[in-house]
Length: 385
Image (cartoon, rainbow, N blue to C red; front, side, top):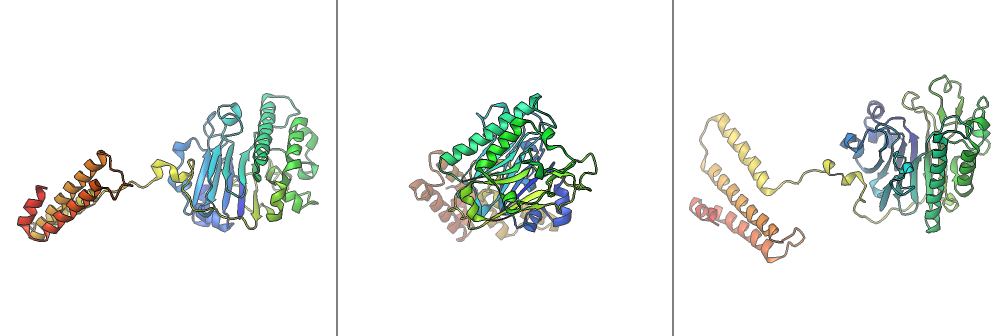
C-alpha cells in the first residue's frame, strides 16, 4: 500500500494543474501509484461546493472535513482505492463533535481494517513563545489528537497518523538560519515529543542523519530557492506496523507554485484488503447528488415513443401499423408499471420479488405483451387490463 500525504494549500486551484500535467486527478494518483491520498488545507467553501469530478475519482472513494467556523479555511480530504474501502470513517472527531477543536475541518479518520488512519491538519499558532489564543488552541488540539490515538491503541488497534503537524521535531528538522527554540512554545514541543515517543516518525527512522530535507518553505521570501525550510509533515506509525514499513520519502519535485509544501510518500507491505462491503456512511459514493438517477421501464418506453414521434414529424409520413402496435405496447407497459407501483404502495418492496403481488404484476405485463403479438384486436383487450 502506498499512502501519499500532502498539504495542498487549496485543492480546487490545483486540480486544473493536475489535468494539464497528468490528464486528470486520477492521473496524478496514478503517477505515484497511490492507494490512499491524504490532502490537508483543501480550503473548500463547503460540501455544496464539492464537485462530482473531484469527489468521485474513478476507482476511489473520498472522505471530507470542512471548516464550520470559516468558509474556505483549513479542510482535510482522504481518498481511498476501492479495494481498500474503509469499514468506517469519522471527521472532526477529537472532541465531542461540537467542541471548538472539532469545528475547523482538521481531521478525517478512516478504518482500513489493518490499521486506523488519522489524516490531520494541526493548527498553526505562528512564531510564538507560548503566548496567544491560537497557541492555547493548538496545544489543546495536540492533546486531543494524542488522546484519540491512544484510545484506539488501548482498544487493540494499530494507528497511522499522517499530515501537517505544524511542529518540527528538532533542530535537525529546521534550517540552521531559523531559530528552533523561538519557533514553538515549550508545550508544543513537549506534546509533539510525546507523540513521537509512542508513534514512530517513519521518515526519520529511515533517514536518521539527514539535516537538510524539509517539507515547507516560506512563500513570502525566496526560502525554497535556498532550501531554507522546516520539516513539519509526517507519517507516524505504531511500533507494531514498522515490520511492514518499506519506505518513507519526501517528494519535493512537485511544482512550487502548486503548494508551499512537499509531499510525503509512505509505502507499506502486505496490507490486506477487506471483504467486499457497502461504502460507509461518509463515503463520497453515498452523496445523493452524485448518484445516477434510476430509470423506470415506463420512462424508457416514453423516450422511445418521443423519438418515434419526432422521426414521423420529420419525414411527414403517417404512423404505420407497427408504430401503432408499439404505441399500444407502451401503453400496456405503462399500465402494468402503474399496477406494480400500486403493489409497492400496498407493501411490496423490491426485495419481495417472489411475493404474489409482484408476481401478479409480472404476469399481467407478460400476458398483455403476448396479446400484442396476436394483433390489434387482442391489443384492445389488453388496454382494458
